[in-house]
Amino acid sequence: MKLLSIIVPCYNEEENVADFYREVLKNNAFFQEKELELEFLYIDDGSKDGTAAEVKKLRDGDERVHLVSFSRNFGKEAAIYAGLQKAKGDFAVMMDVDLQDPPALLPEMYSYIEQGYDSVATRRVTRKGEPVIRSFFARMFYKLMNKISRTEIVDGARDYRLMTRQVVDAILAMTEYNRFTKGIFGWVGFETKWIEFENVERNKGETKWSFWKLFLYSIDGITAFSTAPLAVASIMGVLFCFVAFLLIVVTIVRKLMFGDPTSGWPSLVCIISLVSGVQLFCLGIVGQYLSKTYMEVKRRPIYLIKEDI
Image 1: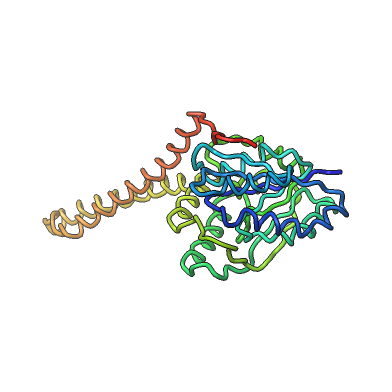
Image 2: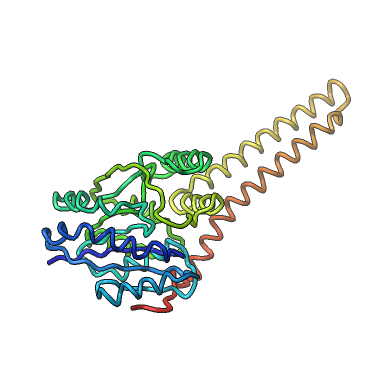
């Protein structure tokens, strides 16, 4: 018998805990046929509702269910990392508890593992049900990342991924504090099979990802896997130095030819404002990388556990 660890990050998802469990067990015949044992790892990311209580109810009837509760909300990246650390399986799969990652795909995903793939990943081919603006910026983010980073990140990629033990250990070897899992998956490599599926709306409840949170998450991804913004800041600095030199030459020539070097104050104010804005923008870029370095050197734990059942 081989063990499959099912990692389920949860944050205020009491309505979906039991539904997810039942939906996965609809594949019981397949698991028995393949001689796969299961362990459910619910990672409660500091929920303020009854998520932990619902998991404990499942635990009372099935010892394969495990609960790890954080002392507070540390974010989905920390929950994923904790789940991978706790997973004891020969294989591990990460799934969203809201059933946007269809458990019905598990048999197909495992079949590719049997064929020799190291991991099987999923991607959405549509974003039906998402706000149009969020969908547009998400696509732009993936295009930008693949242009400025050597790490490939597939458009529409989900965290829903089945991995062998070797891949799990490789991910755990990356102990950075500022984690961007989609990039880490691409960075570690290994032979990956991609499965496409139509977007599935949440089973119950509302998404915890606002546009602002997704924007900050995208910045984390860019700074974690690309130094191109720093190069852009340097190039802009050189460019504006060159433009300033040309303006000095123009001012001298105008003084010699027309004797009026001080005309055009409105345009000068606009130029100063533009250059100041660019300087602040470049400082902001440097500040982002500096803040990530600051958090890394503190070496704080990625998460703290309040309860482990």
